[in-house]
Image 1 (tube, rainbow, N blue to C red):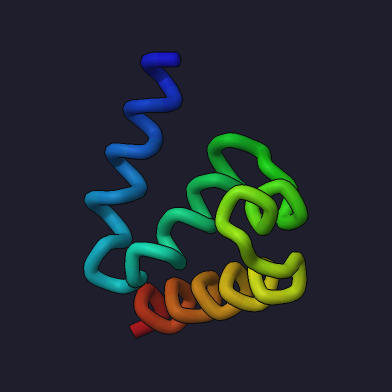
Image 2: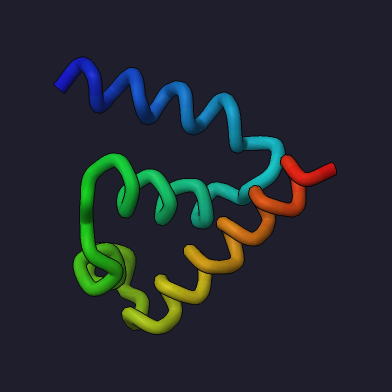
Length: 68
């Protein structure tokens, strides 16, 4: 559990200037907690397509940010 908290803290500090709060939350929930897009959508009251779209756009933002 402590490792998960540390992972969240590192992600948040590293990516907060690139991603908005919702994007950051979706990326962390999917990568660190291994939640599916469907599961994330259920607790965020979003469709699976909306979650996967935000996730894809967030990764694109990160790619572009670190490409520069």
